[in-house]
Length: 317
Ligand SMILES: [Ca+2]
Ligand SMILES: [Ca+2]
Ligand SMILES: [Ca+2]
Ligand SMILES: [Ca+2]
Image 1: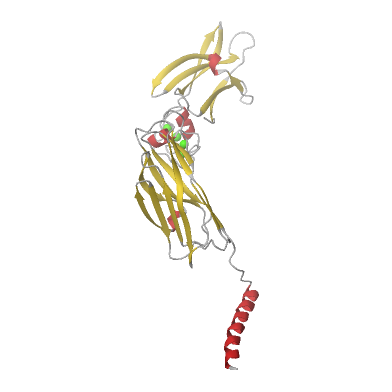
Image 2: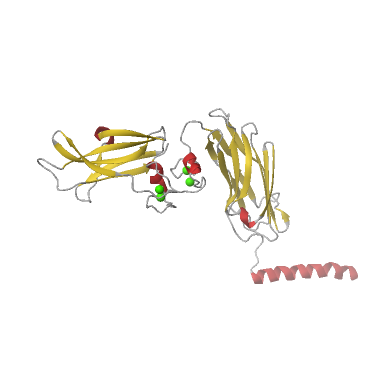
């Protein structure tokens, strides 16, 4: 009888818990997916390349450990900083030759979160050969919830990863954050190499950063609009001209389109190559070009007035 009672009581208790669970609508722990990713980036020899580590789901986590393997002959780590997601945790880090270890911990689990866990600032060896590369391979990715290391044995949770890569690009256009502005130019003027800066206007001169880049002006110094209009007589007929600075280097990631109108409504493209009447080198990879319009300002068919503008567009390098 005693034995029967002992075995019966825990059974009742378990039943009561299950019933309570049913009443409160408590569901068993849901399977969750966690994906860690690093990008495939380019870097010039000697450049510091900030590489973001992103986690798509940090809900319910109290600890995250990430270990990245890299080629120490090509790369060195200058610093590691927490990203917007990683800032919710305490970050402990260590870097040894070819291995960066990041441990994020917090006392309570994070209710929800996703995004940039950390940024690893890699310095590319100044003597690196073009096209040489280092894998940025995730050697460890483990997570802790309130009860300890998240158990994958049951198959309920999945942890997946995208490994990164850093390839040396000595001469070409480097724009890892894909905002159309060359990263070396962004670094020179202190703009973020991780975020889109196209429309920023820190100097308040009305020229967004993309235009400052395209016209060779300083994004931190207010400047007058560097475009200038004039007129030129070609074949006895007067035309409007537009002079503007443009980047003259190899790959700039930009295309320049000159447009003209007589009514400020219908803008017509002007052939920049055919209509360039003067080119003046300004140094620093910038040249001022003068482009002639097509609308006659004198003679037969003359328009009473004309307007010209330049449109700078980002193109895929
Ligand atoms: Ca950029
Ligand atoms: Ca940027
Ligand atoms: Ca500006
Ligand atoms: Ca400016």
